[in-house]
Image (tube, rainbow, N blue to C red; front, side, top):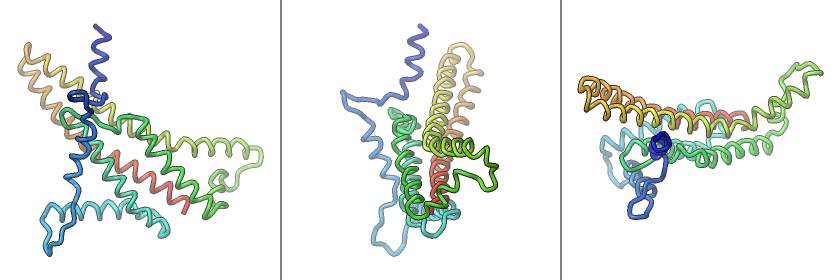
Length: 231
């Protein structure tokens, strides 16, 4: 009985299928409807105006700490932010799952982008990039230890990016699953407790929407900070 419960608990992270076909690609394509499609009009509607304002604000927040040479990354970082937000919110829809709860996908995003920032720093300013491995004024006996610690902290950055995104989204979805299961079980015994549980579930759903957007923003912001150190 315990094995069945555990399987059901984590079934939400499996790719849903219909008639043997994966529903992931149609669900991800459906989110593209929310992306602004430029049209030849003098006046834009309120939705496109709001979307353009949000993109402009996000670009300003993310690119503010980055030097001018790094501003060429703005299009890619904003595209990454938009993709992460849409994928994070995808799991809140029925018959879908969150692709970013898969550690393999998050590592596939974090590792190449982090490596690109490191390689840019080594190509453009190798002295400054290598200087981050050894703080100024370090006593001579501590130099090997500090270089080792700083190297490990540098190499662990993409893992931290991927694990942070995966863990936050996974924990929230598991908690929502447990609370919804409790609400269904309480409907036959106590209507009052079931109603309170549903209210908690609704508030948790709103929190998950905020977490989905915040985690996408944090992922992109940390990449911009890594870029700042190397441009």
